[in-house]
Length: 306
Image 1 (cartoon, helix red, strand yellow):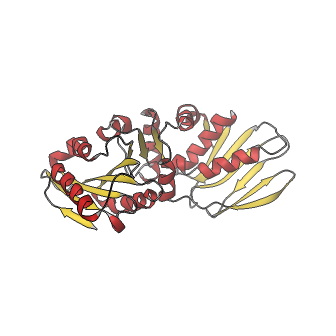
Image 2 (cartoon, helix red, strand yellow):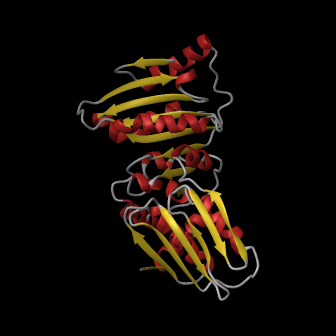
Image 3 (cartoon, one colour):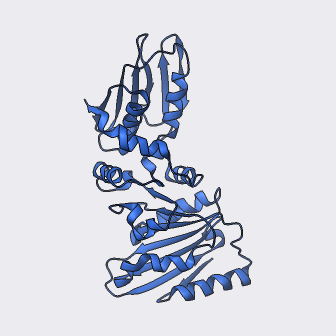
Protein backbone atom coordinates (compact mmCIF):
# COMPACT_ATOMS: atom_id res chain seq x y z
CA UNK A 1 0.00 0.00 0.00
CA UNK A 2 1.29 3.47 -0.95
CA UNK A 3 -0.08 6.65 0.63
CA UNK A 4 0.74 9.91 -1.17
CA UNK A 5 1.11 13.10 0.84
CA UNK A 6 1.82 16.00 -1.56
CA UNK A 7 3.07 19.36 -0.27
CA UNK A 8 3.08 18.19 3.33
CA UNK A 9 4.96 18.44 6.63
CA UNK A 10 6.68 15.92 8.86
CA UNK A 11 3.90 16.38 11.41
CA UNK A 12 1.34 15.29 8.82
CA UNK A 13 3.54 12.34 7.86
CA UNK A 14 3.69 11.21 11.50
CA UNK A 15 -0.08 11.47 11.82
CA UNK A 16 -0.51 9.40 8.68
CA UNK A 17 1.83 6.73 10.08
CA UNK A 18 -0.23 6.50 13.25
CA UNK A 19 -3.41 6.23 11.22
CA UNK A 20 -1.96 3.45 9.04
CA UNK A 21 -1.04 1.44 12.14
CA UNK A 22 -4.45 1.91 13.74
CA UNK A 23 -6.47 1.14 10.61
CA UNK A 24 -4.32 -1.48 8.94
CA UNK A 25 -2.62 -3.19 11.85
CA UNK A 26 0.86 -2.25 10.73
CA UNK A 27 3.20 -1.99 13.73
CA UNK A 28 6.70 -0.72 14.35
CA UNK A 29 7.38 -2.82 17.45
CA UNK A 30 9.51 -5.34 15.53
CA UNK A 31 11.72 -2.76 13.82
CA UNK A 32 15.33 -3.13 14.89
CA UNK A 33 16.77 0.08 13.41
CA UNK A 34 16.12 3.13 11.26
CA UNK A 35 17.81 3.16 7.87
CA UNK A 36 18.15 6.67 6.43
CA UNK A 37 18.88 6.72 2.70
CA UNK A 38 20.23 10.00 1.31
CA UNK A 39 19.80 9.84 -2.47
CA UNK A 40 19.09 11.84 -5.58
CA UNK A 41 15.47 11.60 -6.72
CA UNK A 42 16.35 9.42 -9.71
CA UNK A 43 18.14 6.83 -7.55
CA UNK A 44 15.29 6.24 -5.10
CA UNK A 45 13.62 3.14 -6.50
CA UNK A 46 16.79 1.04 -6.80
CA UNK A 47 17.80 2.00 -3.26
CA UNK A 48 14.34 1.21 -1.86
CA UNK A 49 14.30 -2.16 -3.63
CA UNK A 50 17.64 -3.13 -2.07
CA UNK A 51 16.52 -1.90 1.36
CA UNK A 52 13.24 -3.82 1.13
CA UNK A 53 15.07 -7.03 0.31
CA UNK A 54 17.59 -6.50 3.11
CA UNK A 55 14.74 -5.71 5.53
CA UNK A 56 13.54 -9.32 5.37
CA UNK A 57 16.61 -10.08 7.48
CA UNK A 58 16.60 -6.76 9.37
CA UNK A 59 13.06 -5.33 9.79
CA UNK A 60 13.47 -1.58 9.93
CA UNK A 61 11.95 1.80 9.22
CA UNK A 62 13.39 3.14 5.98
CA UNK A 63 13.44 6.92 5.56
CA UNK A 64 14.45 8.00 2.06
CA UNK A 65 15.56 11.57 1.62
CA UNK A 66 15.04 12.05 -2.14
CA UNK A 67 16.79 15.25 -3.20
CA UNK A 68 15.05 17.00 -6.10
CA UNK A 69 17.58 19.62 -7.16
CA UNK A 70 15.71 20.42 -10.40
CA UNK A 71 12.96 22.19 -8.46
CA UNK A 72 13.85 25.50 -6.79
CA UNK A 73 10.79 26.01 -4.61
CA UNK A 74 10.89 24.77 -1.02
CA UNK A 75 8.53 21.81 -0.91
CA UNK A 76 8.12 18.43 0.76
CA UNK A 77 6.19 15.63 -0.95
CA UNK A 78 5.97 12.35 0.95
CA UNK A 79 5.01 8.73 0.37
CA UNK A 80 4.36 6.07 2.97
CA UNK A 81 4.78 2.48 1.79
CA UNK A 82 3.71 -0.47 3.91
CA UNK A 83 2.84 -4.09 3.29
CA UNK A 84 3.89 -5.62 -0.01
CA UNK A 85 5.35 -2.31 -1.20
CA UNK A 86 7.79 -2.18 1.71
CA UNK A 87 9.03 -5.73 2.27
CA UNK A 88 9.41 -6.33 6.00
CA UNK A 89 9.92 -2.64 6.67
CA UNK A 90 7.91 0.54 6.44
CA UNK A 91 9.22 3.04 3.91
CA UNK A 92 8.85 6.81 4.09
CA UNK A 93 9.99 8.67 0.97
CA UNK A 94 10.56 12.40 1.45
CA UNK A 95 10.97 14.27 -1.84
CA UNK A 96 12.63 17.53 -0.88
CA UNK A 97 13.52 20.63 -2.89
CA UNK A 98 14.62 24.22 -2.47
CA UNK A 99 15.73 25.61 0.88
CA UNK A 100 14.58 22.44 2.65
CA UNK A 101 17.63 20.65 1.23
CA UNK A 102 19.81 22.66 3.60
CA UNK A 103 17.96 21.29 6.64
CA UNK A 104 17.64 17.62 5.75
CA UNK A 105 18.35 16.44 9.30
CA UNK A 106 15.39 18.39 10.72
CA UNK A 107 13.09 16.57 8.29
CA UNK A 108 14.40 13.15 9.29
CA UNK A 109 14.61 13.54 13.08
CA UNK A 110 10.82 13.60 13.77
CA UNK A 111 10.41 10.30 11.88
CA UNK A 112 13.15 8.28 13.60
CA UNK A 113 12.16 5.25 15.63
CA UNK A 114 12.64 5.98 19.36
CA UNK A 115 15.53 4.20 21.08
CA UNK A 116 16.61 2.41 17.90
CA UNK A 117 20.02 2.55 16.19
CA UNK A 118 20.35 4.74 13.10
CA UNK A 119 22.20 3.72 9.95
CA UNK A 120 22.82 6.22 7.14
CA UNK A 121 23.38 5.07 3.56
CA UNK A 122 24.44 7.03 0.49
CA UNK A 123 23.74 4.71 -2.49
CA UNK A 124 25.43 6.92 -5.10
CA UNK A 125 27.52 10.06 -4.63
CA UNK A 126 28.80 10.58 -1.09
CA UNK A 127 29.41 13.73 0.97
CA UNK A 128 32.91 15.08 1.47
CA UNK A 129 33.03 13.70 5.02
CA UNK A 130 30.14 11.33 5.88
CA UNK A 131 30.63 11.66 9.64
CA UNK A 132 30.31 15.46 9.44
CA UNK A 133 27.24 15.45 7.20
CA UNK A 134 23.96 16.37 8.98
CA UNK A 135 22.57 12.89 8.32
CA UNK A 136 25.87 11.20 9.18
CA UNK A 137 26.20 12.96 12.52
CA UNK A 138 23.05 11.30 13.85
CA UNK A 139 24.01 7.76 12.71
CA UNK A 140 25.93 5.02 14.49
CA UNK A 141 26.91 3.51 11.14
CA UNK A 142 27.49 5.30 7.83
CA UNK A 143 27.46 3.23 4.62
CA UNK A 144 28.83 4.52 1.32
CA UNK A 145 29.36 2.85 -2.04
CA UNK A 146 32.39 4.21 -3.86
CA UNK A 147 31.78 1.70 -6.68
CA UNK A 148 28.61 3.58 -7.67
CA UNK A 149 30.24 7.02 -7.68
CA UNK A 150 31.28 8.88 -10.81
CA UNK A 151 34.96 8.77 -9.78
CA UNK A 152 35.46 5.69 -7.54
CA UNK A 153 39.20 6.15 -6.93
CA UNK A 154 38.91 9.80 -5.94
CA UNK A 155 35.96 8.94 -3.70
CA UNK A 156 37.97 6.22 -1.99
CA UNK A 157 40.77 8.67 -1.23
CA UNK A 158 38.26 11.17 0.19
CA UNK A 159 36.74 8.47 2.37
CA UNK A 160 40.20 7.64 3.69
CA UNK A 161 41.04 11.26 4.48
CA UNK A 162 37.73 11.86 6.29
CA UNK A 163 37.29 8.42 7.86
CA UNK A 164 35.74 8.12 11.31
CA UNK A 165 34.77 5.08 13.36
CA UNK A 166 31.42 3.80 12.11
CA UNK A 167 32.15 4.49 8.43
CA UNK A 168 32.18 1.63 5.95
CA UNK A 169 31.98 1.21 2.19
CA UNK A 170 30.23 -1.49 0.17
CA UNK A 171 33.35 -1.89 -1.98
CA UNK A 172 34.91 -3.33 1.20
CA UNK A 173 31.85 -5.49 1.95
CA UNK A 174 32.13 -7.07 -1.51
CA UNK A 175 35.49 -8.53 -0.40
CA UNK A 176 34.13 -10.73 2.40
CA UNK A 177 34.23 -13.95 0.36
CA UNK A 178 37.67 -13.16 -1.09
CA UNK A 179 39.10 -12.47 2.35
CA UNK A 180 37.63 -15.69 3.76
CA UNK A 181 38.98 -17.83 0.92
CA UNK A 182 42.46 -16.30 1.10
CA UNK A 183 42.61 -16.68 4.88
CA UNK A 184 41.51 -20.34 4.63
CA UNK A 185 44.19 -21.06 2.00
CA UNK A 186 46.91 -19.60 4.22
CA UNK A 187 45.77 -21.78 7.11
CA UNK A 188 46.82 -24.91 5.18
CA UNK A 189 50.41 -26.21 5.33
CA UNK A 190 53.13 -25.39 4.55
CA UNK A 191 52.93 -22.42 6.88
CA UNK A 192 55.43 -20.17 5.11
CA UNK A 193 55.58 -16.39 5.00
CA UNK A 194 54.20 -14.66 1.93
CA UNK A 195 57.02 -12.78 0.21
CA UNK A 196 55.06 -10.95 -2.49
CA UNK A 197 51.45 -10.49 -3.61
CA UNK A 198 49.95 -9.62 -6.98
CA UNK A 199 46.32 -8.52 -7.34
CA UNK A 200 44.68 -8.21 -10.77
CA UNK A 201 41.39 -6.51 -11.50
CA UNK A 202 39.48 -3.72 -13.15
CA UNK A 203 41.42 -0.49 -13.26
CA UNK A 204 38.75 1.68 -11.60
CA UNK A 205 37.06 -0.79 -9.23
CA UNK A 206 37.69 0.24 -5.60
CA UNK A 207 37.30 -3.34 -4.33
CA UNK A 208 40.48 -4.26 -6.23
CA UNK A 209 42.41 -1.51 -4.46
CA UNK A 210 40.95 -2.35 -1.04
CA UNK A 211 41.84 -6.05 -1.40
CA UNK A 212 45.41 -5.14 -2.28
CA UNK A 213 45.56 -2.73 0.67
CA UNK A 214 44.19 -5.38 3.04
CA UNK A 215 46.81 -7.91 1.92
CA UNK A 216 49.60 -5.33 2.30
CA UNK A 217 48.36 -4.52 5.81
CA UNK A 218 47.73 -8.12 6.92
CA UNK A 219 50.79 -9.83 5.37
CA UNK A 220 53.31 -6.99 5.69
CA UNK A 221 54.85 -7.68 2.28
CA UNK A 222 55.06 -5.94 -1.11
CA UNK A 223 51.81 -5.92 -3.06
CA UNK A 224 51.65 -5.16 -6.78
CA UNK A 225 48.35 -4.01 -8.25
CA UNK A 226 47.78 -4.86 -11.92
CA UNK A 227 45.00 -2.69 -13.35
CA UNK A 228 43.17 -4.16 -16.34
CA UNK A 229 40.42 -3.09 -18.72
CA UNK A 230 37.47 -5.17 -19.96
CA UNK A 231 37.33 -7.36 -16.83
CA UNK A 232 34.89 -7.61 -13.94
CA UNK A 233 36.10 -6.46 -10.53
CA UNK A 234 38.84 -8.76 -9.11
CA UNK A 235 40.07 -11.48 -11.45
CA UNK A 236 43.21 -12.97 -9.86
CA UNK A 237 45.27 -12.96 -6.66
CA UNK A 238 48.73 -14.54 -6.33
CA UNK A 239 50.40 -15.07 -2.95
CA UNK A 240 54.05 -15.97 -3.53
CA UNK A 241 55.82 -18.22 -1.00
CA UNK A 242 59.15 -20.14 -1.10
CA UNK A 243 57.42 -23.45 -1.94
CA UNK A 244 55.26 -21.94 -4.69
CA UNK A 245 52.35 -19.54 -5.13
CA UNK A 246 48.77 -19.70 -3.91
CA UNK A 247 46.60 -18.54 -6.82
CA UNK A 248 42.91 -17.70 -6.85
CA UNK A 249 41.72 -17.10 -10.39
CA UNK A 250 38.25 -15.80 -11.25
CA UNK A 251 38.34 -14.70 -14.90
CA UNK A 252 34.59 -14.85 -15.55
CA UNK A 253 33.32 -13.16 -12.38
CA UNK A 254 31.41 -16.31 -11.39
CA UNK A 255 33.66 -19.28 -10.53
CA UNK A 256 37.02 -19.18 -8.76
CA UNK A 257 39.83 -21.74 -9.02
CA UNK A 258 42.20 -22.17 -6.07
CA UNK A 259 45.65 -23.57 -6.87
CA UNK A 260 48.47 -24.20 -4.40
CA UNK A 261 51.51 -26.51 -4.24
CA UNK A 262 50.80 -30.08 -3.13
CA UNK A 263 47.01 -29.64 -3.30
CA UNK A 264 44.52 -30.49 -6.06
CA UNK A 265 42.81 -27.59 -7.77
CA UNK A 266 39.55 -26.56 -6.13
CA UNK A 267 36.66 -24.77 -7.77
CA UNK A 268 34.15 -22.68 -5.88
CA UNK A 269 31.23 -20.49 -6.84
CA UNK A 270 32.16 -16.84 -6.30
CA UNK A 271 29.75 -14.54 -8.16
CA UNK A 272 30.16 -10.80 -7.80
CA UNK A 273 28.12 -9.87 -4.75
CA UNK A 274 24.93 -7.91 -5.26
CA UNK A 275 23.81 -4.74 -3.57
CA UNK A 276 21.13 -6.40 -1.41
CA UNK A 277 23.55 -9.00 -0.06
CA UNK A 278 26.17 -6.40 0.84
CA UNK A 279 23.66 -4.04 2.45
CA UNK A 280 22.20 -6.86 4.54
CA UNK A 281 25.68 -7.79 5.75
CA UNK A 282 26.45 -4.24 6.85
CA UNK A 283 23.15 -3.97 8.72
CA UNK A 284 24.18 -6.95 10.86
CA UNK A 285 26.75 -4.92 12.74
CA UNK A 286 26.58 -1.57 14.47
CA UNK A 287 30.10 -1.50 15.90
CA UNK A 288 32.98 0.20 14.04
CA UNK A 289 34.79 -1.96 11.47
CA UNK A 290 38.32 -1.67 12.85
CA UNK A 291 39.93 -3.77 10.11
CA UNK A 292 38.49 -1.49 7.42
CA UNK A 293 39.82 1.51 9.34
CA UNK A 294 43.32 0.01 9.52
CA UNK A 295 43.28 -0.88 5.83
CA UNK A 296 42.42 2.70 4.88
CA UNK A 297 44.94 4.15 7.29
CA UNK A 298 47.88 1.75 6.85
CA UNK A 299 47.28 -0.29 3.70
CA UNK A 300 46.45 2.02 0.82
CA UNK A 301 49.82 3.77 0.71
CA UNK A 302 51.70 0.45 0.58
CA UNK A 303 50.37 -0.68 -2.78
CA UNK A 304 52.70 -0.70 -5.79
CA UNK A 305 51.37 -0.30 -9.34
CA UNK A 306 52.41 -2.78 -12.02
